[in-house]
Length: 251
Figure 1 (tube, rainbow, N blue to C red):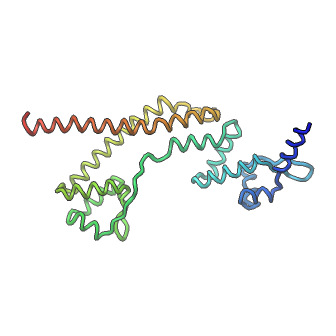
Figure 2 (spheres, rainbow, N blue to C red; figure 1 turned 90 degrees about the horizontal axis):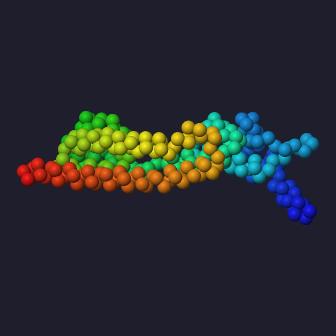
Figure 3 (tube, helix red, strand yellow; figure 1 turned 180 degrees about the vertical axis):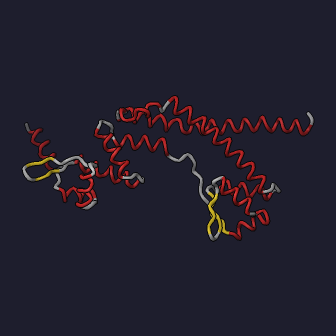
């Protein structure tokens, strides 16, 4: 009996009136009521004319805040919340989505002004070469210069030009490499989608445990895919370098 009384007291201590809940969640009462109208928040429990909210309402508001911070629109949040009410755990769904869509690259953008570009490329800084770089999706042109999405690629480009390779030839090789890289990525996407992500076809039926298992599986596979791609590239370079040396040397 004592345990039940303690439980009731703890439950009562976690109850909020509408203003108290809004304050605990760091939002306005008007925003809270808007969430209610959009069915993003569960109905409160009524005791006479008083509406009481609990910890589950505060947890829901924190999930909404996290989703908004991640860039989700309210319509998408409503869909996720609806899925949660159907038995899925929203936090697990967020974790699964993050595991699947998190960036693979860790590239750092770099900005070069026009003087730096001129010093690096000289008269090879032509409209044609600039247009090709833009078409490949690597640079954006600004009034004071350009921003390249990858410092490493830009450094490699400058180094090759310094070695005497024409910028146009570097860009042509870059386009070919990009096409092959896209094909490799497509093969991995097809493999993972066909063999592992089929449960996403019925994502509304995933239990929290299944979503967590799939998330962990995706996280384990990501570094494996990168390792395979890197190994395949270095082995291919071994084969091609040997073949080219034999062709040039006549051996």
